[in-house]
Image 1 (cartoon, rainbow, N blue to C red):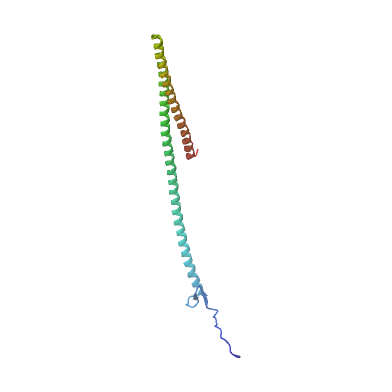
Image 2 (image 1 turned 135 degrees about the horizontal axis):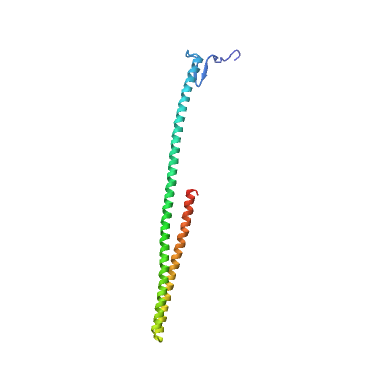
Length: 178
């Protein structure tokens, strides 16, 4: 093996390899090749800028649409809360009117029964008249207790309604950002 040698491939330094393509061999000067690549890069850059502008315009439109939708949603929530509040106000007004009417009826009924009891006691003398009056008084007292229970129940409903009204008002204030 003495005197044997291996030949190495000779690489021509004038020939360049870029991205798997041998350049400098196609009779196009390296300067022209670079200029052509620069023009392609400028065109790609211009296309990218146009696409970015389009995307920015679309984003602006979507932001505007989102803002409009959020505004409409807030208005809808506001209207719903106001509607609920109005219904609650109407119910409370009716409950108050019913309560006032019941109280007036109870007061009137009590007065009438007392007057009737007095008249009976004056007109009737003796034990029989007294027992009837006592029975009427007992009946009247029972009726008064029933009416007072009704009044208490109506007052409880009014209190519940007032509490619900306060809660609804607080929710409305929060929704309206007050």
